[in-house]
Length: 297
Image (tube, rainbow, N blue to C red; front, side, top):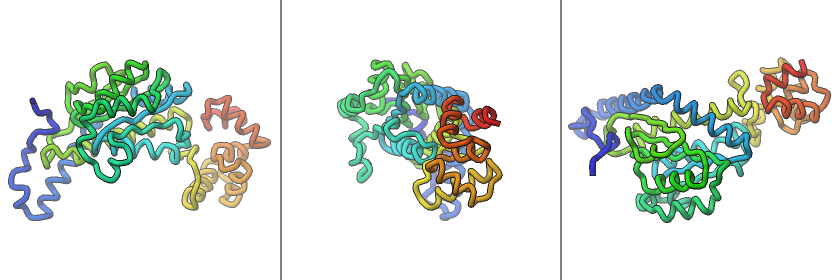
């Protein structure tokens, strides 16, 4: 079996275990930087993927994140952040990690080879034509992820494939392919390092652009955040204050009136007569705070 780039040998790996600790870390750090740099070449595809994902959510579909091993953990981390950061309902986000909860205690490799497990997970999730599936595998050949991607296509879902090897089997039939062509790992095959770093960056960019498309970002603020702890309630107050120009005490009062909705609180500060009017303006604007502000201004 031919090895892909993710199984290749790094030209600085020889004698790594004999180097001084700081010298070894310098090689490792340079490997991370080189991995991060490859994301620039994939920006167009990441943008296309974010558009598909946003359209799915706008059409009452779901985002389904599918992966195994360390790649699956990168996908899961992105998925778990979406409800709190952008207020996307938890039932619109599906996480299919090979092995499920068991993998969070023991990231055993056998799960990633199990196609039947993938098909069972896919059937249980009810993947359908409205959904957008983001399938990730560093090698691009993980059986669990390949089976999920194929099943999703058969069900008519949109499929975004992310892999680190050119010509990956995972790209076959995908609607959008995101190639993160990372160099060989300093620790050969340890794709939690360079490949995982590039995936994490790509996921960060992807989900942030999804939030922008959904109208949940305004001048760099997360205006649809779920403020469910002290820190986030304080952040919500600062966001309302910064956008509207009111003081923090007034921002807190407006947030209480809007039942915690940052967007509605900003619109109340801008002259909306009540929360119902603010929400109606948001509905007419497709949840875009900027457009809603212009409409009531």
